[in-house]
Length: 240
Image (cartoon, rainbow, N blue to C red):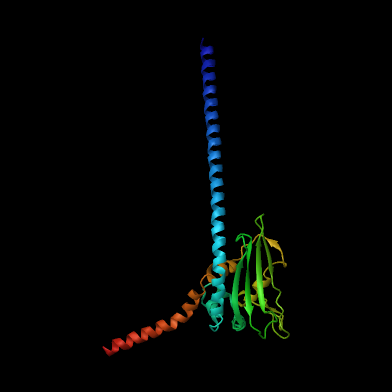
């Protein structure tokens, strides 16, 4: 009798375990179905958000063009904005600053679908450093998560030292702090390489400087005015 009772109890325990396992499997399946439903909604939302962003990207384009036309009338605007930016200013050597005096305009152009990449173009006035009227670096985001990068090959004029980290006249390697900003245009292993990297300089220009460069231009030009205001206040206090 004792053996039979033990067998019966074991069978009941096995049945209870199987019941719990079935419930667990059903719960996980229902959870997966719900998660799939959420993913579908999220995909739809992303498509709608992307559609809105594309619409407003087209609306912004003529305003950006208008802004660029105005900036052209402001002497050394982009050089000043770069030098005032806490991160970008560290990338410009003294020689770079001389070249930036010839910078006519900066343009950031995103792909039409806003998710395939972007290009950053520097437009220059005729200058004694290189032949190029514009220098461009393009980033193409591929479906496998890698990035295809292509950039301008700078045509330096004869007799000019190529600021690529090497002093051509002496054959000496420069220190990192002396490396030119223009090495950014050749800062890939090979042209059109497909790599898994994140270009911090491109991100700063595209997401921070480009949307509102006046913020950084005003930082440089606002310091003098603030000092003048302080001096005025001191004069007024003295008069009292």
